[in-house]
Amino acid sequence: MPSFQDSVDLGYLYLETDVHLSADGILYAFHDDNLRQRTGVDANIADLEASEIDALLVDGRAPIPRLDDLFITWPHARLNIDTKSDATVLPLINAIRTHRVIDRVCVGSFVDRRIKKCRSELGPALCTSMGQREAARLVLATRGLADPELLVAACAQIPVRSVFDITTPALVELAHDLDIQVHVWTIDEPDEMRALLDHGVDGIMTDQPRILRDVLINRGLWAPEGVRR
Image (cartoon, rainbow, N blue to C red; front, top):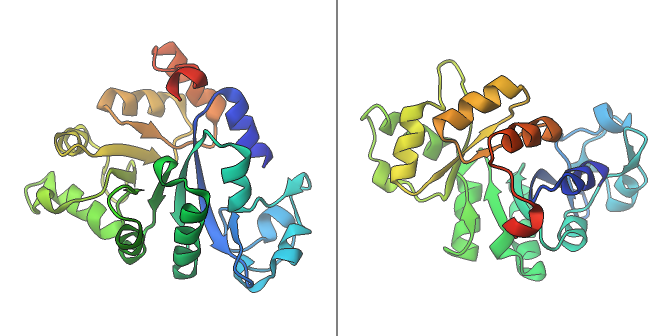
């Protein structure tokens, strides 16, 4: 929770997390499948029960947060949630319904079928990003090689580059023409943040929220959290 609290304290309204499912069906907000790097315990979240996970500390500081805790602790925060396995999809759908947070979440995944399942269960009110296939269609559409009208996601959450440049001005322009936002990950260098803002991207995911905030403030793009609510 401290990393989320730090971002909230800086004034961020939008938070991002991955979710994994414990062996007994509890969703945890954590990036890696395996816990060794951050807790020293060489085990996968999927293989442990919640009581075992709750006893661990991230970097010796704090427990691994449950997704429910994020919804409850910050009722005004918007959460971008990446489903990291097929097993997380239905529990995530149920959590969104239980907490009535469909208006403040965006669901993403590399795997298109997971996103499609969330869309079919929760309907058009749910914000979703693109899976790999949809994102590839958007990239191809910038080259005239695919029909962009088939894209239904609210946003594309993509890297800047792979074996070639992905987040180009042409892609951002096409996405905006389709009323699709472009969010890029993971950007930690201020010069790259500035260049992407010049391209017109709508969101930047970073491990350096203070640096990003400073860049946004210097550009006049930062608003107090209460104003953006």
